[in-house]
Amino acid sequence: MSEKRLDIQGLRGWSIILVVLFHFFPNYFPNGYIGVDMFFVISGFLIAMILGRVEKLDVKSVCTFYYRRYAKMVPFVSIKIPEDALRVYVTGFSAILILVGKRHQNLLLSNPAIVYIGDISYALYLFHWPAYIIAKFFILEIPFALLLGLLASVVLAVAIHHCFEKFYRKWSPTVILIVIIALSTSCVLLTLYNVGDSDLGSGPVDYTEINPNDAAWNMTLMRYLNFVEGNRDNFELENLGCVYSNSRFTFEEDYKPLGFCSMEEGSGGHDFLVIGNSFACNQADMIFKAFGKYARRFNIHCRYICEVMVQTPNPACGTLLNLTAMIEELKPDVVFVIERSLQLKTGFNTRNPIDDDKTFKDLMERVTDLEERTKKVYILQAIPSCKMEWLKIAHILQRPLKEMKEGLVTRDDFFARLRIHEVEKRCRTCEVIDYLPMLVDENGHYLGYNPDNNLVFIDYANHLTRGSYGVVCEILGILRFLIFKDIQKFIQDVQVMLTCPQPQSAANFSQ
Image (cartoon, rainbow, N blue to C red; front, side):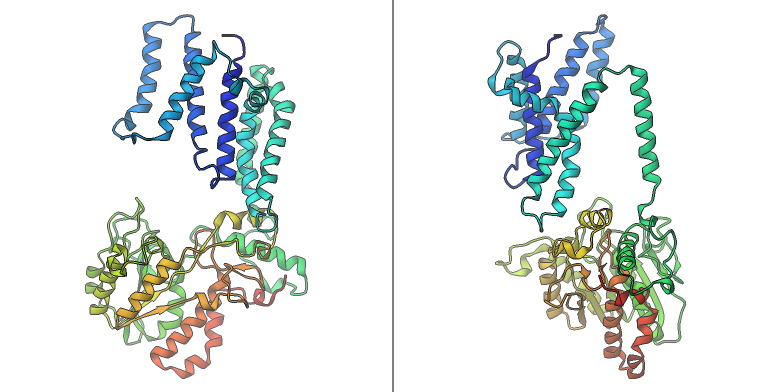
């Protein structure tokens, strides 16, 4: 067993080829994931081979070995594998190839090129994924970006194999231990380094110190704001002045800034309630600034990722909020349903009546309940989601968002907008709030950011950022006027805009 098994190296080579092609070109190689199963077969063979080399192979050693295998497999014994599962056949076939390969070298596996790919497979496995992520960022500008990323992965793997791996295997255990400790320490230090504060320091930005004529500074500021919006924990969810009572209407403790909270009672004549998932907390402060003057009681209830109008398919969501009990207790006059659509965005057959769609029926049932128990219901219309990994890459590579064109957003809002639009037609006291028409560019396209100042509208958590607050405040100001006909307040809308937490100086910045 001391000689090198070329067939196993060849099998390892084919495995990494399948995995890499699956990651770079999933539409053309949809079953490439089976390469991972082939790796497991190889690992199992090598483990068994190592066990076979143990000089003292007593009963205890064998029992310990199989106990560990058993402990890993037992949790999955109850899972039924489909009879036509491709992975089962591939796993079995890989094992047969290893068994036969010792006595009969196979040209398909022992081919020098495939064996060499097997030699560099570990380095290729490590490098191909970051290369793919970077290449994906350039795919809109460079048609062959993925091919270049694949080529870069191979070149880096070859270089590491010849310049590091071959020498690394000859090092003594002491040297290897020192290298591992040094690399681990560097990883820890890198995780402690906040790239978001590297240019402007920590804390809030002092806009009075900004020079509007300094283009380089402007781009640095935009990158910083885009980055910090998605990296400060709960920064976009805080509702200052809201008194929390986390045990009310929630099962969780220490839920702040999510959960249930109440603003200080006012002198107005109406009771308001803002409900939804984290989107509600994200925007409740702006709603309060617009309508607080008219509020007697202003309550906010928001969950983490879970929608309150339909069941979100997430293990963290559990059961739906008892909305009827909440409305009965609080008795709000006006309800704002502010949710980031998740389940509502799932597809359905539009050729069938929409009443056949279970998600729509659940939504309509909850809306009808609100309609019967309140005076007015405002429902937020869905907007496209943000591709979070692209936003991170833009920051790391220090590139303006305009180079991404339309690549920042996932246009997944069609079915949600269809459902909500149908609800508006059927609900007598409901109105839909739609941000999207106010967030498009001059050509009517929603890009996910403002091309005039490079500020994103949605952050890593798909919450609204300060880049979109001005638009939201403007919409709420118009809505306030339509409800209460307060012409004096409407004329003073500039003051409302100033109360919105947005960088006013940045609004006029150019690239």
